[in-house]
Length: 251
Ligand code: NAD
Image 1: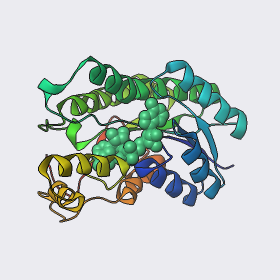
Image 2: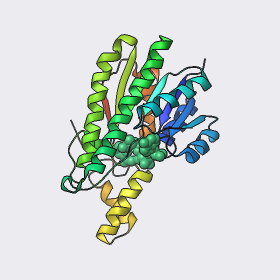
Image 3: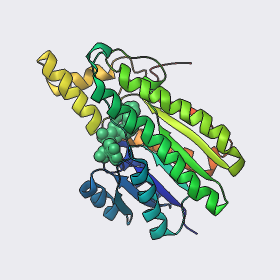
């Protein structure tokens, strides 16, 4: 029996790489994303399924997960990957930045946990939930304070869900990328480049400073860890956040 994985935000970046890797590992993959067109393109290239979702909306999340279960008949892995990254100092943040980033990053994770858990409990065989945290959710980063705080929240949800859901044989873990070259990071680099009147390449190099392994992450570097958390080799791990930052922070 093929296992079924959902990847939210799988239309591009880390989510796309995770969808491709999970497909290569033998999963049937469903991509749930705000961007229906791109999601559909990625899904068709991996014989997958795509549906539109707004992860910040609980009803939308439950409806989208239901369409996946109707399509594939089951669910085994839920990757709550979709996220947004407001940047700027804390003093620059406004009501809309706060409401939106918490609704998508923390809300999207919570609703994803709930919708997947409902299905896992109905199946009675457990399941794996994998959430997108961030290096910025492990230590505070100037200029990423609001974003980072939503990712601290993701780690909090991950720890509590692991404890509340263990009785259903559900594990809940998270991955914390440093800087991975995706549309999200390229957009942040572009903003930085414009402000400094330098090139986008210069800005990307700034993100790479302080990385022990001397390079930015590719989305596949992060997808490798997602694949580990989705597979049997991580069965005895729950409530943890795995840092994937090429050696930037140490603990
Ligand atoms: P990205 O912006 O390149 O892709 C995110 C995807 O999520 C897009 O396809 C977008 O359409 C989708 N999405 C956004 N809001 C949504 C919503 N409300 N409902 C449904 N889909 C939505 O991002 P990425 O760089 O691939 O990041 C993926 C995850 O990893 C995010 O949670 C991000 O915060 C986290 N992360 C990324 C980095 C990095 O360096 N790229 C670092 C740390 C953490």
